Length: 281
Image 1 (cartoon, rainbow, N blue to C red):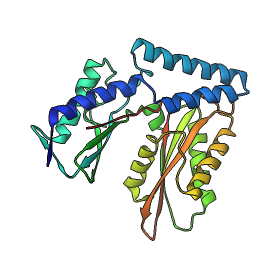
Image 2: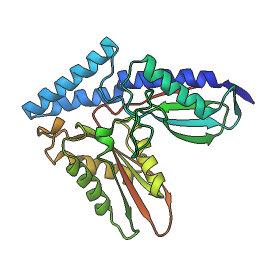
Image 3: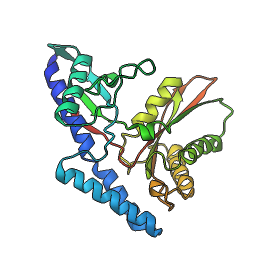
Image 4: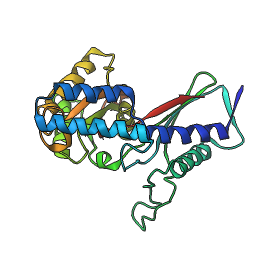
């Protein structure tokens, strides 16, 4: 049984939330650069150039890419053969988030109650924590800070099994159409299909953490990703809503088995700075 100290988890989470907010994954940076080259709308191309400059400046100056440094979402794959010592996992994660947002001078955006008083917790805790027990003796942590300009544009629908492929595609495209410029396009779209009500949403959130250059391994869903992306980019919303063919950078679909009577579909909208960083302990 391998022992992992809770303090190491806290330190790792602290580093990850800071890194994720300041340095965009290379695959997404490359995708934005390619979109700028292929964009034939002059205004859209100029905006993509500005977005690229902002990303470069954030990295060079060691500052957040966006002023909304998000609510901290933590995905953790915990090996069943490891033992966390000197503290609980959840407390360690929240300590790491708190230290990261305070020491990293990141904006604190979490309120202690969703409706009654909405008083800021002043350290961006508590985090949203999703854990999964896996084989082995390691822990993989992914921090995915999520801004709410894009989060607010997300949607979930409980389809029946009679729904056709075109119905699901239409739902995803319509979600982006309704969002318009609100989520700071070009967007990254995570789609969760299957599971139940809440798990479809988790799948959609996880989909945003996938490399944007990697398509679904299943040919059926790969084709859906490509068709949805094509239809979204035909909406002419464009970068920041000023028109153009770059409304979305990619569409990632994740699936899971579901009940015989259901077909849940969730769409999680990510802005052009769909952030995430991972580390294995």
